[in-house]
Length: 401
View 1 (cartoon, rainbow, N blue to C red):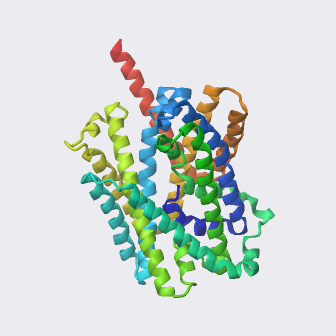
View 2: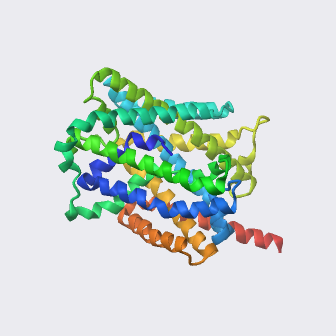
View 3: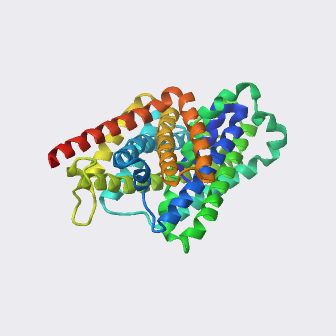
């Protein structure tokens, strides 16, 4: 579960929510718990692993299920360039350079991801594990270094009951940290006993990751005044408060850049094959289903590359919207989870688990409403995807007649 979101979300959430940032993280983590129970039932029903598309289709029908690949495509073409820009800013600030270096470094992340996928190279589990442990080690060092300042800095993260309106919009932003949460269901087939192992493993992952994000937010709050916090590179600011400063800054920058490259390679690999599969099933144009002799979906990767270029150009022209872009991508995940909850309730009926998730549905829906325009992209994507699938279904019915 540990991904690139840990690089900037602690500072972004603190910059937006201030003293209520810990409440934002706590609420974001707690709302995931009912979904763990929902996804456990999914794993019990299908221990070999199955996609969220099939899960939504079971309860809401084929039209909604066929929207899922389109929503993932819309999500990744915004989320990955935004994450790449985060890594680019880490590099630029570490070098004391400007926006040009940040853009070049961001482009390098995406080019590396596209090139490796075109070559058919998939990051090994060993490399992924090494990147994850590097992120964990970096976070641990930054947290430990801030311990001496905790007692004097706690007022900075003391909840402010007069500004609770920041909580739900903050949850939409913070939820990017748990983006890909449902991927744990895909990994379940690698467990020794998926039916027994899924819940304790996923709960442990969620708990540890939640604690890390909270502690990193505290570390930033007690060492850096809120007015001076950089939403994107707060961890790098924190690194500059630790001696030997140059070595710590270098290590954090290298780990941040490397983690984003690994993240981008994995997402391009997964989504390009999702697009290729959507082409085969007619959800997307069938030309996207074409692969090379070695199975590389070059046309799907080319589509992703073109969309990365478009979104990257927008982020280059308006660099101040990087955090907003992440929030819009995060909103798509929330919409996918809302569809999953409704599907789950329809399939299972009213049980303790489904009622808990239906209560969660209200919280997530309210968070989207309070986030305002940041949620608009997700709503538009779902509406367009539904319209396209309804039109195609009707055309298919007429053709059969």
